[in-house]
Length: 186
Ligand code: SF4
Image (cartoon, rainbow, N blue to C red; front, top):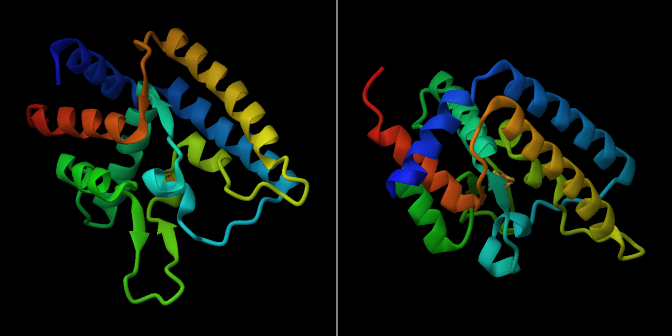
């Protein structure tokens, strides 16, 4: 990681527990859930949305959102006595073409896959569904909602003084996990 990215990640990590950041994402999650409830896309737990290379899909997050999500998931994992996200988990996920938070079961004949951190998943994961609906227009509401949310995320970065960067999901996770690993003990 170069020095410029490292200093950005440190700032995102500092701001991850800022009350305005937590309030923004809490409210955004509720608003997204309301739209999803109204649109009623079907999820068959195929894991398609989280198998990026296989599905031909990329997910992006802002640096601040990545730091916020990882901090929340790591905190939840501490409560469960589970490991925080590690760089090697992210590298393994990249090798498979999926997400380090994806949970699969090799013995499941239906090959279902689940988000292991459903409660804290990022906004993009809450909006993206592979179900395009009976009229095939399911991607339109998703794009509109995503773009609206993303504009608000940019404003959030400005409001709290976070440097802005838009990163591919695993790239963002590797940066945040790498900075956490390198940080001096609290
Ligand atoms: S965070 Fe969860 S929903 Fe999002 S890509 Fe990873 S496994 Fe899938």
